[in-house]
Length: 98
Length: 371
Image (cartoon, rainbow over all chains, first blue to last red; front, side, top):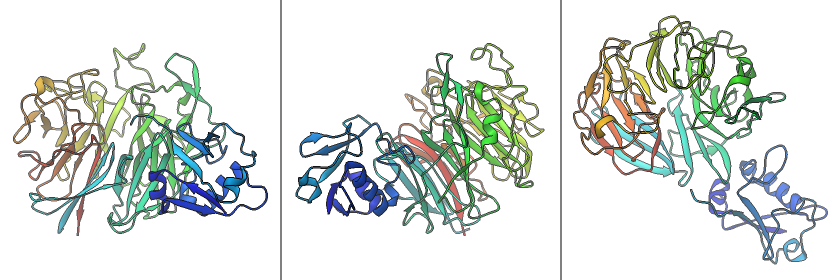
């Protein structure tokens, strides 16, 4: 089970509480976790990544165990702390005025 | 009719304003989708409780929301807008060709004939249609064949902001794009051609009479006379009496013929409304006086409507989708400002009063008369 912490706007869109939990089959990678998030919450498709290319939207960041994984390839395995649910994968709206 | 609902999109959420038919006492409901830009909300003419909302922001992109209970509850529907085929390129600010890129939905126009059909006008300019209540969207890509390679963005982006349907001919559609012009389809949106003859853009285009490239800000139609169109261009107020085949200027005695929205009275096809703005860089009313101008002769002869509107130190703008009429008699007229005020007139514009004064900047206003 992987915990994913979403920004408030996306929690509201998904009707979710502070964190959501998803199951990932196979190797728990960043991309697999996001695939599982979009499968469980289809209303989030297109809001974190592009529908087709799966590219991260420009003002979205991915934080993993105090590290910025925004530029990591999607096939990068997540560390055990994330894979076991000890720490959440954080999806963050980047600092930007508006 | 027993009540009026005014749908207001703002920079930071949507608001629903409700009143009885007297239109004097209003309830304000919102913000819905707080913190998001709501470019447009509109109800289906066939089912007024079915509403669509375009919700977007820079972080999370585009979401389309649908309500089937008049805005009490909402469900996200489809938000995948994929250009048909290879999107190609259009003109960019520096004269180079730039690939079409989806940014947001500017306008949602529910069908006059099919409750499940809704059109979406998007930036970069294209027209999409859904036949399943917004769940999935398909581009009507023939529009971009109408000299799309020559279109270029205006300061607000290259947006398709206006969609009009001919109530007498379901195959006839009109769209307007900044900065490309007006376009017409006579086959349900499959093929399109520019309908810009008579528009003159003397300062904006090297060829003032170009086939495409005009910065059309808004077009409007009265359903009883769908061959007559009214246009607020960047500069100039125009009309066509032959479904866009030719246009003539009707700016007449307006204090400025720059502006964004234009609307037609619900029961008088020759009564039209504009909100003059000083210039393309000074986006506020001339002399700091907020005046709606009404012509009862289809243009050329205009009267200022000022009763109840601020007549000094007013420097707000009224955006292209932020002027609307209701279908009651007398006709109600509504507009929202970039200062967050929504004004209403229950007597065709003779008297005005603010419904609400301090919303976020208003992007769009639509009015629904409910049974």
